[in-house]
Image (cartoon, rainbow, N blue to C red; front, top):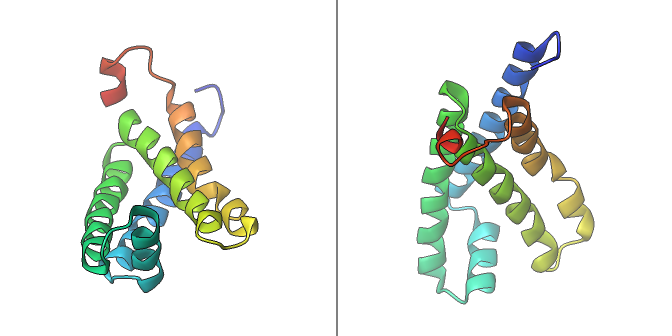
Length: 129
């Protein structure tokens, strides 16, 4: 990494991504009503099934937060960027203003920046480093 403060920047991004995913996990594990409603709307699942899916998402989000703090894995960071983008995009898909999507650019931008900072993998094996 060519930047003089690269380790500090890496840690800022790691804490930011972990904080985002841990915070979202707590909302999901708490059964955030809007998220359950949106999941049901987008998938056609029953309220109970949507609630179970949101609980699984919360567990996965805790996993992502811990991995990013302990030892960021490129595949996990790619997932985090994708998931951050998708969850931001859900807002306009369920009828909220596009600004709800735009204000969440950091949700996918921070994990993508960390992934790029660590280096884009050159092989399948590198995705697990």
